[in-house]
Length: 339
Image (tube, rainbow, N blue to C red; front, side, top):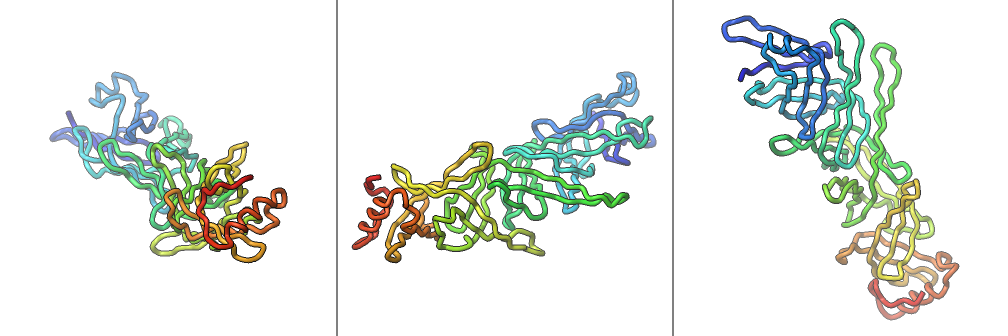
């Protein structure tokens, strides 16, 4: 089986065929590009059977390699050595961010598909499969599953934000000719968890471990329960530059009839998720009760929530019950409290 060389030239898929002891033949067949479930690049030709027999090329070409996304969001695919392709050939694509799910990143590329229609472009949608994580600089990274082994890491360079308690990534770019600004946006659907000290996790999918685990500093270790907000400070950037931003996670504090303190977060469209905490309670002042938060295995999270008497306007007995328990000792979560 003969190896061919592949490239992208003038936004067209190009095949270079070199026959033994003959000159190179350059082909630019009409067809469509896509990505299969194994993240291989697939080209399906629209040329005739006679055309393929003449040049001894398959109608469907499956390429294996490594994906990369640079700081300018130029996507590249570097081929590995197989029976049909040479190692090191690179295909470059100009991309647009389209969307994402817990196990995919969707990009659009513009490709010229017909030599008879110069300047006419089709938009191809490439859906890469894998999972999301945060890198060591708290940037959003997508791990593309390779067809043979391991992962390729594609990092969304730049700042992300929080809107309606969901993570949003926005990118602005300028067209070279018209100077018009183009805005691209991806909204990640997930839920927040605080599982260990100085770490805030945004879970996209538990089964595939698609989770952003951010290194954070909470804006204050003392949170007023009445304000219904958890503030945190996070540094986002790269080795060259890190920028700090303060985000707020909004919700409501409640006590369960079983053990624990709950922070209920509204993600819109009637979707609610709860962050559960254990706690140690003690009396700070005459009218204040402080809960020192813990995770589900009893490790301290470095966060204290302050409850005043006004928080329990509808149930003063609860406040009095906590107050009485803290007179002579600290009490662990899970005590029998009558509501």
